[in-house]
Length: 128
Image (cartoon, rainbow, N blue to C red; front, side, top):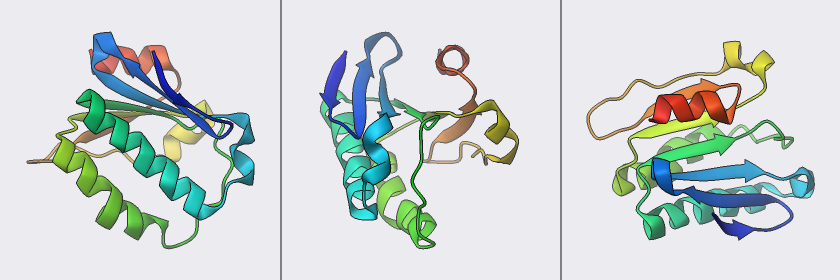
């Protein structure tokens, strides 16, 4: 069920998984970094609205070059919203060739577990 869609990205809620899903659309390449940050914040805002406990983030179409300050913003500003919401699992869907370079996060007290997958079907199996 789509909850938001524009030319840059879409957000849907997967009821059976209690998961919020984010997908980058083809038109997002013209976004600014500020647009990107707004998209991330909008996404997690829907997490609060739907009380999601799991996230699926599809980056197979991702084309932006993020600035060097992105990891700090992610750790200091974005992930704390995941913690506040109580996210338990985050599944990234990415091109198969990128999987060996992608980092994963083990679940620790009050935080989430992050894994990477080549398809939604593989992520869904892990989320169940």
